[in-house]
Length: 329
Length: 257
Image (cartoon, rainbow over all chains, first blue to last red; front, side, top):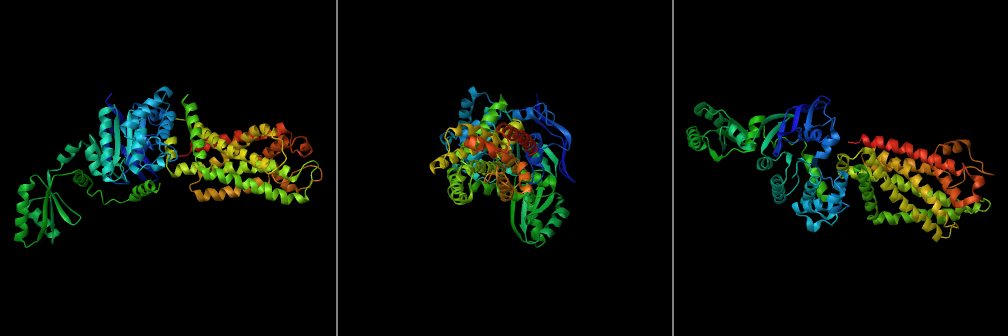
């Protein structure tokens, strides 16, 4: 029992557009697996297929050993899903929502009360359990949804963008729950996100996805290691000139211009910084600022896809709509 | 077992949501009251069926109309669930689509049924002379009528994306079904001469038989000469219509994503 999820050439095409293109991944039992990519990369499509909401165009996959097409019902019983967009009934109380879920998933009546109380405790909503959902805040709703996904003891929990549209404290809170979950339950978590910090903090392994394909897959520290090391970011009045100079005289090839600053990836940032300054002064280039930072996933993403994750604002409205929807009620 | 509990929980949800919606409960009093008190009293001046007042004749028709309007309106629950994402939670659960449809349908029918009982209360309150005992016979017929009508509402709503277009389609269907059901006037009987096309269209309207059945039990022997079909045939037709609509509704739900 090592691989909870395995996909083979899993593909979903909409006409000519391949939302997911020959996906091959295996998720190990007990890990938190992060699918990271910009909006529109195919993350949601990929997990929708794994959750049996969408039928693949070609290819196969198994979840908990069940085929996602032929044994869809068994797959559904063994997984928990937290959708990107809210999916709770706001005219019912928190507890009623949980009871409903327990009934839909065939949790034995004798166990329901106990399990619901335990889940409410886990997501710290015991004192609000009998209030109508419409009186909950966005973060509380999210917590209830995560709790709901656990009622039927799923082996795999899918979290689709769990913290979109939430404020920083609430995000922190939810991350804490997801961590706790992994420690207290025997569960595998598959998480999609377009937040670098989220993927970094939560995942044991990350698959970076872009245009329906996995670009790279590894643990966060390893991914960062694949970059040569540090990133030196220079702001200057002549970025292009400086860029040419560092390549010509210092032999630095890995560089990128992001938000008007030259980002150079180097092995030893501390030693390179003075050399860059010298070079600039000799050539009468004014340096506004020079910053050294450890690589983060943002850099990894940039490195593998050649673009910043923020540039891709493709379906940002999706996220915005979700925020608005939460705040309306 | 899972299916039965799934059905129960979906049914319970619809009823709870309905009972918590006070405005809807209140608004349902108004329409039947207007029809019975104003239309019934004013229009009845030129109308004579031996042994029956016009208010008595249209009373079962107004019951049918209320069933029609409230039942069709229930489709809104599907649109609501789609809009606020809850439909997803139901659709990805391991419960079969037949059960999902049935749970929602019976739940909404229960709500619709509760509203229609109000019509009896209003009728008796404003003095329409009906025998309260007949209510007992009318109730199962009302349940039978509402199943099919709620199914139409749910099926249409499952195809439609917005609340606005649902409202438009609803009006488009409700009024013809209502006017062509004989709810406001008898379709046949001694001295009644309606245009041929009207009776032909009415014969294809399932609500015609529902209203006819309600009249047979509520008005008793006074209605017998004006019956469109004997009671048991009326009931058979309505039941057949329910079965067809449930099959179509299940199909419509099974293709919903």
